[in-house]
Image (cartoon, rainbow, N blue to C red; front, side, top):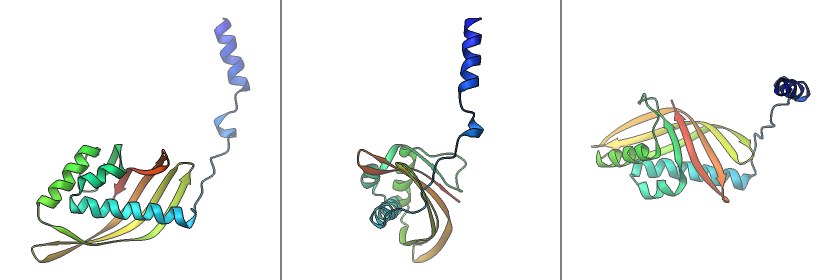
Length: 153
């Protein structure tokens, strides 16, 4: 009976979820910080296509979750590194990568970047264009940005 009364009292005094304000989302970043994140993002893409798994390990979080339209499964850090090495071993190279239509949301030490991407891949003298949308998540940890996930479509 005492526990029921305590739970009832807590329920009556706790603010309801509907009464709580949504967290404020920053949609702009200081120019230097935005430039830093954009540089990290670009290097991740360049290093992935180059098969530079050592460089990727330095900036990708161990909890990485990577989602792409060509795979039904989420990829872990290890699967992502293996995919990078496999791409390089296949003999293709990245000729260019560009990002457009950026939207940035900041939640404290978390930044979510939305963008369109365009890639040019070369293999055996043939060029292939690939384009889509990307959602990428960065977390500030111990004073540096870590890339923790992406979803490509």
